[in-house]
Image (cartoon, rainbow, N blue to C red):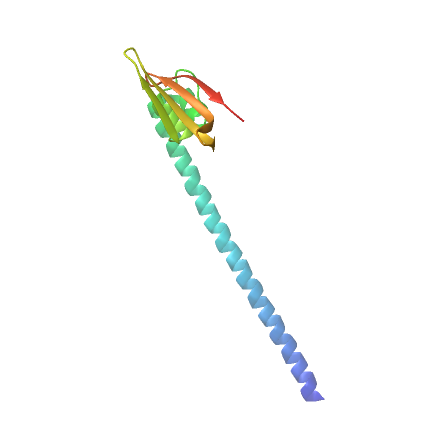
Length: 132
């Protein structure tokens, strides 16, 4: 009987120690994961700040803010559109004696169907068309 009690007590203590070790491991894992996520967030914040600083130096504060927001506007340059929206999926080009017209196509919906078409004449935005 005493042996049985000793076994139960020992087993209980061992179980408690094992649970404490697992709990400590879980807390350590959580702390490491939080530190990793914080480092990623810090790196992303630094990259965004560096990008904004670069855009401000190239285009000025007002246009840099528009670009960061992903906005296009009449008079924006080709470079500004690409900075705001990324490289287009497709580009139509028409060259005449007086001007060069490009249509940048974004957000493909189907074969030759796009959710956004941005029209540039001589590398300046003159309009855009959106589709659902």
